[in-house]
Length: 112
Length: 112
Image (tube, rainbow over all chains, first blue to last red; front, side, top):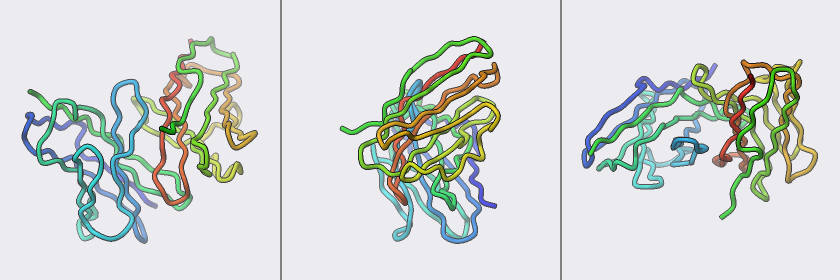
């Protein structure tokens, strides 16, 4: 069985500081991993994905994610957080049928 | 800027009534997904289609939920009869096989 976990319900960071939102996964075979962001009363927006290739994936709005096979992790990062980055972040793992299994989400709060 | 559209955006109905939610996927996308989001359960996959054929609806309560794609531009999710526990935000997403999914804005359903 495959699964994805986001161990933190909430992450707080000051504006200008680096941020990390954690994601770990469990899958047999190669993982296809995604990050999405959800702003209040909106749908999920795609940020980035890892299919194969470089372990550091760059995405939208200055976000990047580091794939680590040995630690089965795919953490989302940004060098300098903005207040406007405050939102709900979801890590997703593609299943055998191409649907996504999502983590429960991590609420990011960036304070001025 | 191609987007997934969903109607209605909000629906309030009484227990026992039929509810129909509609989704227009992005033109050219061959996979369509229905997800449900609640505070308690997070994001759950209900059903998905590839080339209009249903591939998996194991996430849906079969006795009351049904999902169809009458044509490539329309996907529907019906609940009959609706129950208060169906109150949630329902998202439609579309994509191409092996690529990211694009989410609609959601239908917020309240069943009283």
